[in-house]
Length: 318
Image (tube, rainbow, N blue to C red; front, side, top):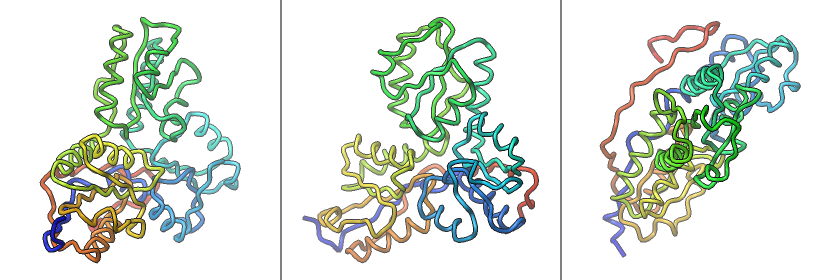
């Protein structure tokens, strides 16, 4: 057992909010500031309980069904994107929409439309039931297939094997997706691929950072909500590197036994988890005996996305 005096916290770089999450939260906050409460949001704006609770306190109302939104009210689509039918329903109901879909998800939607126009059927790599998958699959009324595993690829039955393309959910495991893409290309040699990979820069960067951290840590703690796909992938990536890993919504969920005999504790956060939760985890680990905090080297992100029209412009303080 290591001496507690030597116990160290390693912070992954990058971690936490990505540009798409920053933008989505800002859209809700600016809509509330400009139009007042309530502002309705279809689905959780991002998959983090702290963020959703904070916006709810400010006047955001989260709904799953547009029938719960009164006619003429302001509505924000979540960062995960929505199907064409949801957009059509919102227009039919006269809702004033601000679309907080991450631009990198929108890119996948555009790819789907172009591929369908070319007469291709599309295989989507993603997790069944995830709102991003539902939104992307809903860009076409037909000709879409979903696969989650290499086994799904082997069992897939398509109509036009020589006219196929694939897209991916943006928050998948990079390594797992590479395996599935290889299986698709082996089974369907003529399958077309996106001009640029669909897994977003933030997902990729955070997974690389966790791999780097997991080789140095005895245990890894990922800050993220259970519904967060990208946070769950971070825990899995650490485990595949042979490191014990846990995911917590907040510091109160940390079990002291997890870190009792660890000299180095790695900490990271999913792209929808705010830094305040990371700092609360660090504070809790210090209470449990950690003495030092060291931020690891990693990619610095400077990506920003513009806000939709109809909201106040950003100020220099942002």
